[in-house]
Structure formats: C-alpha cells, structure tokens
Image (cartoon, rainbow, N blue to C red; front, side, top):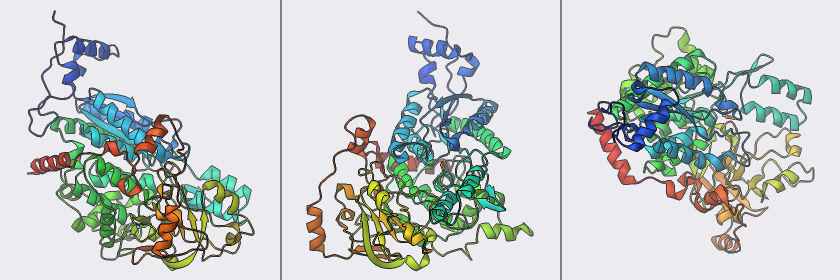
Length: 603
Ligand code: FES
C-alpha cells in the first residue's frame, strides 16, 4: 500500500558542510512508510500543509514560564523569532523545556541545571528539527540550553530575554540584585528603615528581563555572544526594548540559513571559541558562576577547560567594562555604547578571529562591523566611561582569579575586582560554620567571637554537600560588625555566590568539604592566609595535622535516596569539572573532528 506523502526532496545542503546530507526532518516526514504517514497526518492536525512540511523545521526551545520573571519576555521573543523563521522559508514549531527561576526554585537552582540541560538535549534530539532557536535568560537556563544544544549538535543559535530596565529610586539607578543585597545589609545594620525597603521593593524591578547588572545572566548572555552562539549585539539589548524583538526576528531568519548550511554547535563552540568567551568574561568583570558553566558547556563538546586556563587568560586580559557589581554602570549603559561587540572590538588582538559563529562568518568578519569609539564625537567620552580602552583599562588584569593551596588543592575562585583591595592579602583566624542552619543561628549573636580580621568559613555547601552548590558563599557580615561600620570580610566556602554579589569572597573550594576536601578540616581558631596576587589560599596547620583531621572525616548521609536528587548525588562532578554529570561529558575525538570541519567551512 502506498500513502499520500509530501515531496521528500531534501533541502539543498541541509545538515552538513558537504551539501549532500538530507535535513533531519526528512527522517520523520520524508519516507513512504506508515511512520511518515502518521507524522504528516498528525502535524496536519495542527493546520499545517505539505508546503509547511517541505520547509526546514525550526524548533523554538522556549524556557518561558510564569514562575520565572527573567524569562517572561520570551513569550514575545518567540513570536518575533517565528516571524523571522517564516520570512526565511522555515517552519517554526515552539516547544517548552524546563525553566529555572533563580530566586524561586528550591532548594537550589544549580541542582536543576543538569536536568534542564538533559531536557533540552533530549527534546532537540528526539524531535524532527533541522535547527533550533534557544530562548533563555535567567542564570541557569542559558548554560543549560548551551550544554544541551552542544550535546544534541543540531544547528542552533541563542536569543536571551535581555536585561531589565534600570530600577529607579530617588534619582539613583537600582540594580538587581546588587542593590537587594546592599540595602538589605544596611537594613540589618539599622541604617535603612522598613518603609524605605518597601519603597525599594516597588522600584527595583521596572520591567521583565533578567538582572540588569553584570550578574550571572548578563555574563552568560555575553559569553554566548562571545562563543559565537548568538548574533552580535544581542546580549545587552534591554528586555522591553523594541530592538530586542527586531533582533529576535533577525535570529529567526538566521537559524533557517544555519539549518540549510548545516552549521552545528560543535563547529562553533571550539576550544578557541571558549578562550574568546573567557577573555570576554574577564573583560566585563563577569560572574564567578561562568567558570563552572563554561567548563560544563565545553565538557559536552569534549573540550577541556582547566581552571588554570581561566587564570592564565585573566592575567593577560584587561578589565574594560565598568559594570556593577564590580563597577559603576548597568546593562542599559553597555547597550547604549555598543554592547558586547564594542568590548570584543577592544579585545580583538587577544581573540581568536578565525572562530566560526552563527552569522556564518568568523569573529574577525563580524568585528569588522562592530562599533568603535572613532568618529563618535562627544559621545566617545560616554563610551569610554562605560567601556575602557585596552590601552587604559580599569585594571590590567581580568576580573577573576584562581587560587591554589592546601585548602583548595583542586582550585578556588575569587572575583577580585569586586573585593576590598585591603583584604586581597590577608591573614586571620577562622570562624567556622558547618551548615546554613548554624550560620543563621549564630551570625547575629551579640556574643559571637568575631572581629573584622576574622575569616568566615562555611562548610558543606558544595555540589554533593548542600547538595547543588547553592549561592550562599557571600556569608552575611555579623550584625555586631555591621554596627561598627564593617561591610566586608574574607569569606571562604565550597558554595557559589550570585553574580550580582560583591566582597572578598572565595568560592568553589575544591574538592568540597562534604566529600573530605581540606575545607572540612578547618576548625574555629585556625589561621588562614589569603594571597590573591600570588594566587594562594593556605590553612596554616601542619600537613600531618591536616591529614589527621581529614582521616576523621565521615561522609554525610545522602540528602536524597530516590529520583532526580539521587541521580544528581550519584553522578555530579566537582566545580572544576563544571558540576555536570559524569555520563554526559562529550568525546574529545568528536570535538577534534568538529573543529576540523569548522576550519573547512572557513576556507
Ligand atoms: Fe534571574 Fe537574576 S533572578 S537573572
């Protein structure tokens, strides 16, 4: 028996660099068998016809959710992307994946990043898609989608929701969530009233969009652009700005082109592209979380990013973007002066210009059209306020540093541009908290034995210990010190912190304390030495004593015995490996093959 069928002729060149590969959708729609018959019939049930089924099928992978304000704008963004896909001759089909709202998801958003990445990967692979537009915004959704798309390796590009408009209060800009923390600290110190806090609550978040400082969401959007997975200029456009919709429409047109040309994530996200992203991360003073996420995305593609690479590139990348929480301005200002392309143009001599991007062109070709300061008249001064030149940077080095020492043999991270300069070399006695509950019960005790020189230590907040490595590394300053005017102290943990936070905060200590890392051996009263210029973090006890204490360490009872939590505990890797699951890492051989194909495309 033969069934009526659409024209199965493949789209020329789809899905490969050689131009001979049939589009993926043909496997669902293009055969004369009962499966294709059913696929066509059931797609037609939604009102599509044979003409639609002949087009490249573009999935709109949407993390829109009414439980995630950061991603709320993606409903409109998806419609604009669809217009672009249709304009270019594709068929847009939207589908949902897990959405993780940073401040709403409990117990920790990071617990679910890998779940979201698995959802993205499997839904791309499982469905008849020739290309995918990844719609992300809040902190974990961007890396999760890039991880999943990297593994699925179907032509893809990313569009984010964009940052919120600046909050406004009594003539000053407010930034989420840098000012949430700053004002809450002042409130705890008794310097701000409850009425003022209510006013701030009403004025902080003026629009949809992700946090508008250079927190994790802005950082990951900038990294996606620097990686070549987003069209140039997309990261900084404010969420409610009409230009975000026009950008989305252009992205819809472009994904059809990518699907036809078969340009895949593995050909874009190469080792060199990750080095470009790390340079941009340092130049914008980006979030510490990006270290974990970039390692995880790269791992999906078989690309290893050792922590020392982040430090090496930090030492040779100037800090340029004067953005909070490290600097003065917010994402609206960065967009106004030229966005990430302006930063990349400044960095161009340090970047790998040959990297292929989702424009179908190289970084160098893209940057030929990037904004510069030259010829901008009086506006040049404003540009230089927000993005410094490479010749006169805000700092000669990038924003993040990797520490080593007997307290963190596998590394730790500090955002030193957001730290107090006088604490970057510091020696003090440890005050140890073994859990969040202990911290909460003691931190505001008027009898707490603590001074401004004390080093606050929080244990058991790593990937396994918390579990899920929550953003609790920015331990609150004890109230008695707040009342003395102290606003920063050295704080050390195996947790992460929000990219919007600031202070002298050592994070991602590895191995983590719960599995017997040296952080577990710290006792209240021990001396700790932090030396950021020399990248050292030392617990000042003898090796014998350290070994003796660690020998006494016992593993905590697992927090989960079933379900996803159990899967997480059984397979999560440590922070220097990106906290991905061990069974999701990519094959370095595949990465080498993809990199070679990417080079062929450029020649
Ligand atoms: Fe989503 Fe800040 S809460 S980016």
